[in-house]
Image 1 (spheres, protein in one colour):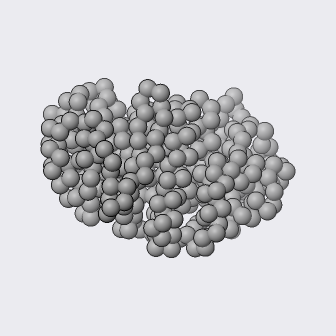
Image 2 (cartoon, rainbow, N blue to C red):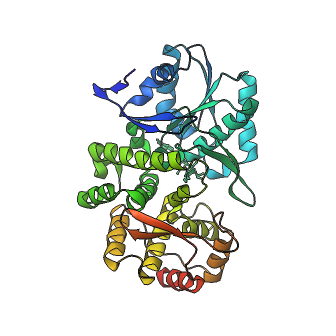
Image 3 (spheres, helix red, strand yellow):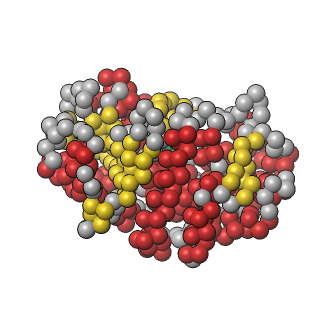
Length: 374
Ligand code: NAD
Ligand code: GLY
């Protein structure tokens, strides 16, 4: 079945996993067609569906999604959980499990995650664990969740000792992206999502990077405009789909998706979670690792400048807050990607190409980070 919206056909990107391939549909207005999309991917009408969302998303979009499910014959109920990273805990997960129990979800039932990455990760993990695993469909409503969190099957919650320490790989059956839902997203959240879009340009897509460069300001949905928005969603989801299909469980290549993230995570945790949005921290992390790569002679000053200009065009920061440099270096040692005590960085080599390396001198990291601080 072809999904269309306002007369236009949805663009479909495939995540070509051998055992569990799935599709990502992207088109304005698709939220009204969730029921048809589920039917088209083989989920029978009459299936019980638990929609997990939060108040900021339920308000503008909950009714349309529920109506679409009911019209297509699904038995849908909605669970509205509180918003925020601080809800992404085992206690938050228990709230979703309680709703699964109340609704008597069965092995053939489905959870729909309607929201940003927090809802997506939590609802995905609830689906991974309820009855040892039921299906989940991701309907992301933040730019970050559209281009990153909803694709690839990483689900989980935070532990008091660190972010995303508890989780499971659980691929969605389908990802449905409706760019119109970004119209209500706070601009700061939109800009944070643009950091991940820049990331895809640097790690694997020169054409995407150059198209963004040609556009001018990219700091809001309206500045980006509907045409470029659709194009960047297609390019970013395709980039993520390629990497996930090649390395589902992060045995190697998938680590390139963490470009800018090691330093970004250190900054996020040292400045107190919530001070910087994830995408803002990633922008600062990309700027820092770019400068490190430049000093190592691995990429040129011109490329570093191009990346910095794009980060600025998205209204994202380049200047680090004042932090204890030793604490940053210490934090890096606790990164998930450390092997045998060596931090493995994703180093940019050219726009569109990165490499994973442990050959970055700690002293250079410290020198660059302190230089970038306000
Ligand atoms: P989020 O889910 O907290 O959403 C940001 C804010 O926007 C929230 O207040 C939310 O209520 C609101 N919101 C969402 N959609 C809206 C809309 N359309 N209109 C108005 N308000 C809306 O944040 P996020 O940036 O989407 O996700 C961050 C989370 O994603 C983190 O927990 C991170 O660990 C996770 N993540 C997961 C992966 C993965 O591969 N699973 C990848 C990246 C990030
Ligand atoms: N967000 C990184 C990954 O999915 O691997």
